[in-house]
Image 1 (tube, rainbow, N blue to C red):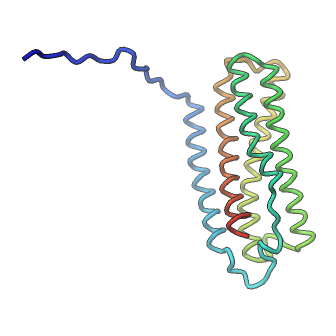
Image 2 (image 1 turned 45 degrees about the vertical axis):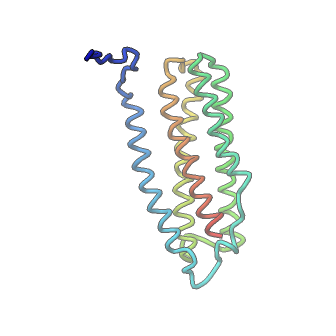
Length: 198
């Protein structure tokens, strides 16, 4: 009986060690996901347990426009990633700036919503359980948006100064991971607060 020697596929891709930045960002996102999970569970647990208003149905309006701005920013940051990979610095700056602008618009929308809740509905973090959990959860997310915007603004400024080059693409992609995380968390927060919670 003839035997056939096993042939290893010589075309297997070689495994390369991930960059420290990517590993660190993955660890950060994992830790942050745990924190957000706690806040989301707390919001759901205390939902509807208030003895006095205002309730989410009384006070909240669905922020469709601002949510679309934030979620669509992930599309533009992907365009920025691809542009810098291909050495198109001008295009990178454009897509990167649009991403920042959309993040700022979203943050403005959060500010408008908070102003309305405080002034029109007299809802503060100390008013009732809804106020406590709402401001904690949405505020936690907003703080992450602020951090992301500050980091992206630094990159934009360095880019305008000519200090960002195609070989920095992996750093840009690492920062973009954070922004995608912020967007993904908002989808969860939006669903819990504005869809399920109302």
